[in-house]
Length: 149
Image 1 (cartoon, rainbow, N blue to C red):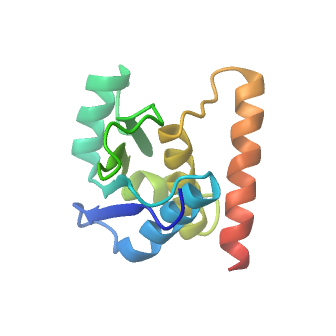
Image 2: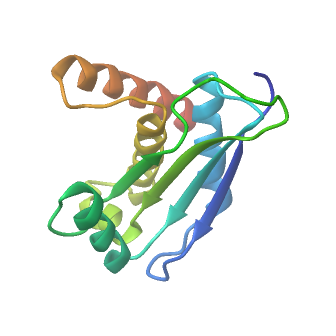
């Protein structure tokens, strides 16, 4: 596929000012670099602690809020109709958690969460050591490109 995927970014929290345009562009850049182009759509939503806590408990058996959750929708490259949008899934990020855990610049940590969430949507994981190494290498590659742009 060529062209640019669609990233729909929404800010549904009011704790931290978020540039949805900036983070949507980063998500789009990651998708393009990973071979996903036009005809694909990703949702990127920034949510508050209460919503993230509820989702983490419900879907991940967590006990509190987390920084990022990814919910892939379409794990197939198959397209039934060529004019159909490929829905990739939802990446949900909780800015208050991200800022709290940021060792330095909160924007660097936010960028990591965007990249991490998108890579999960694309099927990467970090449960096994080899998967973790592959995912960390991909994160570094995307973040290095983002920082240099």
